[in-house]
Amino acid sequence: MPDFFKRLSSAPQVPRLDTSHSRADFFSIDNQSVTCCDSIQPAAPPELQPGRSRPGPLGRRQEWKLSRVATQLQGLSSEADSVDLASDKLQNTLESLKKKPQDHQRQNEAHAALTQVSNSKDNHALPILHKALQVSLAGSIPTFGVGRTLGVHYGTQLAPLSNSAGLKSVQKTGAQWVLGAVGGGIGNLVGATLIAPVVDTLPRHFRPIDPSVILTDRMVAKMNRVRSGWGDEVRAEIVAQQKEILRLDSDTNIHFSERAFGAATAARFLLQPQGFKNTLPKSLALSSGVAGLAGAAVGTHMGFNMARAVVRVPRQEALDSISVSEARPHHEQRVMEGATDVPLFYVHHTPDHQRQGPLQAIAHRWHHDDLRDPVPTSQNPSDRKLYPNWGARMNGVALDVQNLGLSAASRTESMMRATLAPTVLGAVQPFVEASLPGSFSARVSGVLLPVLAIRMVIRPWYEALMGGIPARDAAMRAKRQAVVDALPPPKFAAQDGR
Image 1 (cartoon, one colour):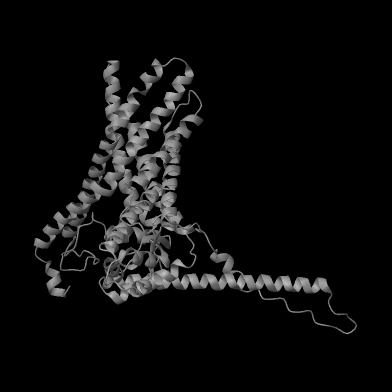
Image 2 (cartoon, rainbow, N blue to C red):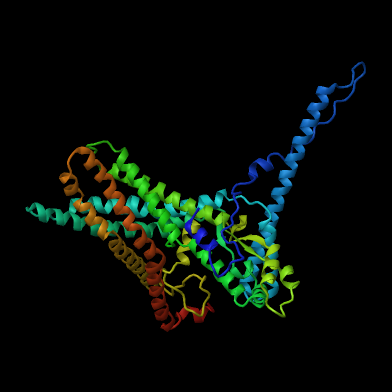
C-alpha cells in the first residue's frame, strides 16, 4: 500500500473521513465476451413426436443448465450496459460543469452521477495500460533507453583524448556526461511530441474528478456549519490526494520509481555474464529493456492507485437533516454514519467520432503545444496560424524550429543536473572494483554502484519534468505571444475577411 494512503488515513484534521479506504475490484466484465453472448438464447424444449416418450430427468437437467447460463449472460450484458450509461452520464455532466464551474445545479447533477458510478464496476484494464505506455514508451525508453545511451556511446568515441591516463578518464567522463544529457534531452522531446500523442489515441484514460463534484460547494458550506473548517479541510485533502497520485514527482511515485528502476538495473547486471562486452545494439536493447520495464511498472502503479483511490464523503440528505444551531460532536458522527465512498478519478471514454489516427494525433498535439508559434490573442487558440506569403510561412517554421531547439536545450540542462553525480559515480566504479579483494566483492560493487546511480537520477529528473521544463516552455510561449500580439495583422486578413 502506498505511503500516502497511510498518511491520509492518520490525518488529524479530518478524523471522521477515512480517505485511505480503497476498493479492490479493478477488472470487471470484458465487453467482448458480453457482446458475443447476446445471441445465446435458452434452449427450446424438445418437440414430442408420436411413439416417443417424454424426456427423462437428464434431459430436463440439461435444459435447465442451458437456461441458467443464458440468464446469467443476459444479466452480465445488462450490467455492462448500466455501467456504460452511468459512465457516459458522469462524463457528460463533468463536461457541462466545465462551462460553468460555479453552477450549484450542475455540481449537484455531477455529484449524483458520480455517486451512481461509485456503486458500479468499471473496466480499468485499458486506462492502466495507457498509463503504463505513457510512462515507459513515451517517457523512459526514448529518454534513457535510446537517447542517453546513444549520447554516452558516442561521447566515449568522439571525445578528444589525451596521452595521460588520468586526463583521458576525465575527458571520457565529461564527454559522456554532456552528450548523454544531449541525447536524453532530445529523446525526451521526441517522446513528448511524437510518441505520447500516439499513446493517447487509446480510447480510455484516467482523469481526475473536479473536487467540487466530489464534495460540492453546498456540502462544504453545510459541513463548515457542523464543524468550523470541516468541509474546507476535506476539500483540501481531496486535492492533495489527487496530486499525490497523479504527479510523477510526488513522494509516492518517486519512491516507487527508485525501487523499480533500481530492481531493473540490478537484474540487468546480475544476469550479464562476466566479461560481457557491450556493443551499441546490445547497449540499446539492454537499456531500453530496463527503462521500459521500470517505466511500465511505474505507470501501472500509478494506474492502480487511480483505479482504487476513493474518499468517504457524507450524503447531502444527512447534512440537510441535521440542525446546526449549535455545533456538537455527535452531529459529525451522525452525518458520517451514512457516508459513501466516491472515486477521485474516472475513466474518460473518447467517442468514436472524436478518435484520431496516429498522424492526426501528432499534428493535433503540435498545434496545441507550447512550442508552436502562437496565433494572436484575439483569435481562438485552436485556429491554425495563417501566413500571407511563403516568406512569412518560412519565418514561422524557423521560429518553430527555434522553439524546439530551446526546449531541447532546456531538457539537456535538466538532464545534466540530474546525471552529474551518477556520472561521477560511474567514472570511479572501475577503480572501486579494482581495489576490492576477490571477484565476488567486485561483482557486488558492479551491481550496487549502478543501482545507486540510477536512483540518484529519479528525483531531480522527475522534478524537472513536472516543474522546470514545462515552466520554461510556457515562458517561451508567453514571450513569443507578446511579440505576435504586437505585430500588425496580415494584409490578406483585412482583404479576405479572415
